[in-house]
Length: 81
Image (cartoon, rainbow, N blue to C red; front, side, top):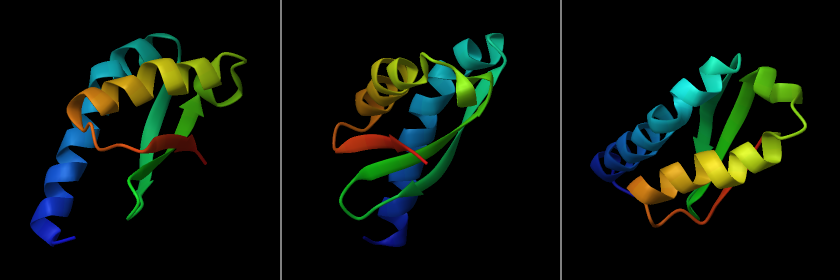
């Protein structure tokens, strides 16, 4: 991908992350974008209270992934690393 396209994709992904960040920080957690692969897999790291939370997979799939997909429908999947 061209670097301009990469920048556009990163802006969309970060917009999705920013949409859910207030909810994560309200519970003492956060999320960090780690990587976006060529096959549209977004890798994130859960931080703070989200890191060990028993509901982290639900947060990841139902919250963060859906927020990113809303901004960037080309998303294949979201993975926590």
